[in-house]
Length: 250
Image 1 (cartoon, rainbow, N blue to C red):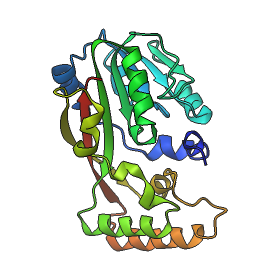
Image 2 (spheres, rainbow, N blue to C red):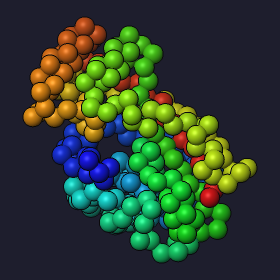
Image 3 (cartoon, one colour):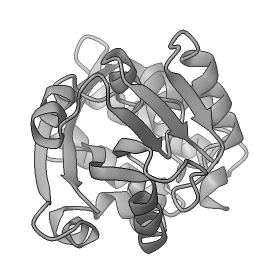
Image 4 (cartoon, one colour):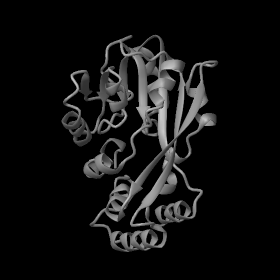
């Protein structure tokens, strides 16, 4: 399946159950990347608009570039109240945005899908002088007992989970994307609380998880029910995340 089509059938679960980004990211970028209310932001691989919303709330004009039709249409539906939001049909390698038009380029939980060299060339083209690129991920933690067993479940049932590059990104692999001397990083704590239907929806929002017509679906859901029953407290389970932010210039 093409990367641009992987989430077409998962939009509803993605909107309901994927984590948002901590509010602390905005003041951090104001300090480290010169973000102001007047900054024009390009959100690349914008999906359903989760990564665009903090910037819209900050008052920024946001161009949300997304190749997947279903996700792009959902972002337009969810964010139509923001007059400063524009959804764009495009990719990281071909955004269709004008030359030197963007103050801050953002990719939220999306950069691992890009052709990095082609994206860097495109980012350089659309960036204004002194513009920054921000790459950020909500990385699910796996230190606690529930988190470790959930990770095992994903390895057991995920179609290509072990090949997902988002679990392998970090400073050592990303620093070379940026102009030498401009790279920096930060991390923030994030969390979600789920009852069982929400936990199920969170798992099904991932592109590597089997859907209802797959023979592994029923045993996978049973395993998830057992895991929830083992670790739930008052009918809830908690996901802990480390929101990792990497920024620099290109």
